[in-house]
Each structure stands twice: as structure tokens, then as C-alpha cells.
Length: 164
Image 1 (cartoon, one colour):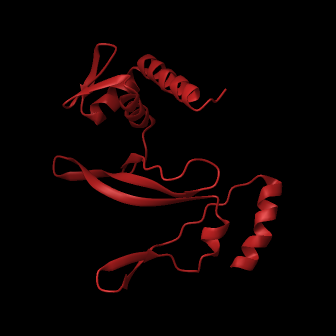
Image 2: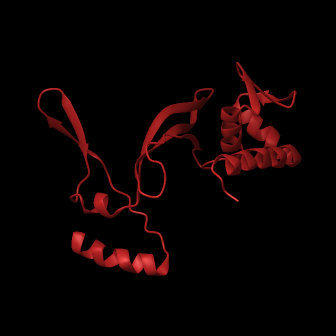
């Protein structure tokens, strides 16, 4: 694998393409209490990759008795192009995937743009809804509020990371 990856890296760089590799994790017992996770296939993929992200499923999201999704943690283990060791959490809804509205609201809460009081979310003194999914529905039906919120978050991120 190492021989093929060394040939492939130069071609990928020349053509400015991206390769996404998905690998499984296996647990191995070392000693009595140490539990170490390893990936099959050696360490060539770890060496040649620019960004490695571990995807771990978290708590279930339920609607009544039905499980409709999961919170997923994306842990950046290695990053040669930016700061490593970031751990964002995203919501994955079964059958629909990821919602942009939920991600924007999550970032807005971290920046202090959207206020969260218990289960209620508010933006500029206006209540958006109770619970993240009702906020998603509100923002999907009120595109002007969503675009305003998205622009505020995007401008704050551009300013924070000096992106023009």
C-alpha cells in the first residue's frame, strides 16, 4: 500500500483532487486494562493522509418512541493543513442527513448570536422555537431570517479566521 500511495500522492497534487478513504477501527487488548484501537492495513494511510477524521456516533435523537437520528462527533485526529484536535458535533437525521439550519444555529449559539434558554431559542428578541427541530422548521419556512442568521455567522467566521 505504501508503494502505491507514494505514486498516487504526486498525481493527486498535480491534478488538485481529493481522495477520501474510509477505514474501520478494531479494538485490541494490550495488557490488562489498556484498550487500543487500531486500523487494519498498516500505517501507510496514516502517514500519507493530510486530514484524518474519526467519526463516532453519540446519543440517539428520539421523537416520541422512535429514534430519528444521532448526534455524531467528528474528531480531527490529524490535520496537516489546519489546526488539529477539533471535535465538532453534528446531528445526522436518518433518511435526510445533515441540516444546514441546525448547523448554523449551533454555530450561532457558540458565537452568542442566538440565545438558548432551557429549550427555547431566540434571535434578536424573537423566539425561534422550542427544541432544535422546531427551530429548523421555523428557519426553513422563514428564509429571510435564516439568510440573515447565516450571513452573520459567515461574516463572524471570516473575521475570526481572516478569510477575505
